[in-house]
Amino acid sequence: MLYIETMKKGQKSHFVFDVDDTLADSYEFNQQMFVDTFAPYTDLSNPVTEKYLRELHHNSRGVAMALQFEKATKHFGIEISPSKLVRINELLHIDNVSKLRIFDSAVEVITKLKFLGCDVSVCSNRQLGSLDKIIEKHAIKGLFTNIISCADAGHEKPDPHCLNMLIKDSGKDKSEFIYFGDSKTDFQFAANAGIDCIIVDHYLNQKKFYQMILQSFL
Image 1 (cartoon, rainbow, N blue to C red):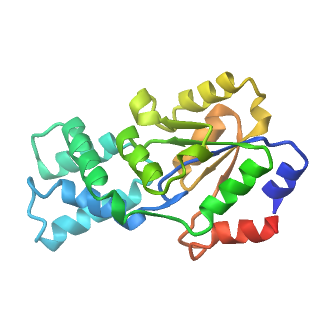
Image 2: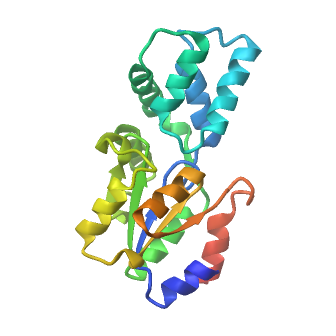
Image 3: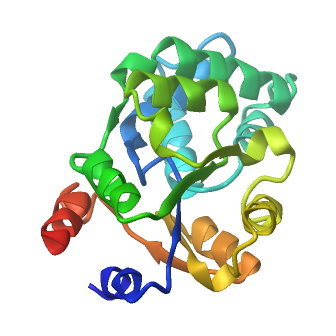
């Protein structure tokens, strides 16, 4: 595969990963948390209501949560700030993080990259509270050079601020970086920072992307 060959040539030394739907198998989990956030404010027993929320979340992959909540509150005419719904949603994520799993072989791939002397970082729109909980649950914090929440930094993707700061602080040339994501927003994020990227839909690849990468290493 192209990116493995590139890494072997020494051109890439810092691998940066998104979390949701990239490292974490979180599509159904995140969608359910999004729906459950509206439980106190809408009638979720109405199939039309739930269908709207699920379709909105599906069509907004990579979009900042505040923007998703803003669109939903306008649709339902709910007088509650999107920022409050973001906080409620974050607490739901933290309380239910045990239900979230990492894609098979993802940890093994990251471990292999570290063994080869590469830096590996996380740069996600997920808030740091739930981000830390996910990493803590899977005992993988020690594998990452940096763990960055773009949401907490106030510069959500595709704003390249967090990637630009990561590159600047590393002292490396941006040509040494590559970003792994799953959405159009992730592609724009990397492009805006001027670095290469790999965009993968794990669900079209039967959740076996990292297994295939590991086989390439071997």
